[in-house]
Image 1 (spheres, rainbow, N blue to C red):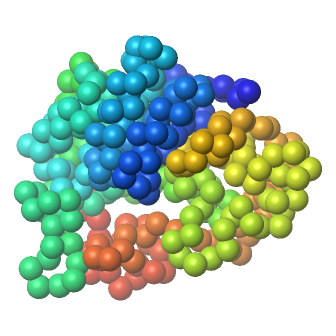
Image 2: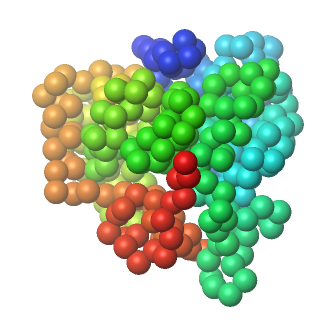
Length: 324
């Protein structure tokens, strides 16, 4: 059975260290996955408008609330999408998320990306003359963060961000004095983000790791196939996925592996612990092997913006508008 370890946010709220991610889950799979997860002890669910599956999550919640869990026993996170960054749009999208899920409130609401799209033209507004999305370069992160912190507590218990760098975090904190409760980031042994993790720790920002197993979007070997990780998994009678989840937990993250397969949903929740030597052996696979899988400049359609300062983004025309 899982150790069911929890972490405490700066708000005092508690969330389970292992949650269920729902990104890249296909239609009709998510409803089943969420129901299986909750019936097997998961209490932390990670959702988003852009995943276009929150209605299915809502259908699953109807099957497990209140028969399996009370609403207040679940920790539910969702995220405002780029096309609703404008202050007048933030609460409207929150209301739509609550409607899709069939719940009265979220435990945590995040700014999904430090990027604004023009509103009113769909989730990926097409650029009028290029094969890319149309950015809103006027709405700043500070504008959106001010709208987030003004959301009623009756609808949102805590607010945070996702995919934010240190300068982006510094900008919104300096402008408002309000520190995000969470920064959800891509984090795995090939992208440990040590400086960002240290900054978040100093500020009391909890880090949630998405894609803890990496992913196969860029054609590199899967992290679960790396010999060092496979070897430690065999020695501990665990799966490589469990080992990678344990690596994130060792670093203090909450971790949100995504799966729609019943056995993997169950096994991902069986929390294992690592020795210092095992942790260091896993960390070593990232030395000289820096890989960020999720870079929107590489998306189709492209987002013409430099978010992270990665080499792949060097030709982007636009910086992030942090604001003041």
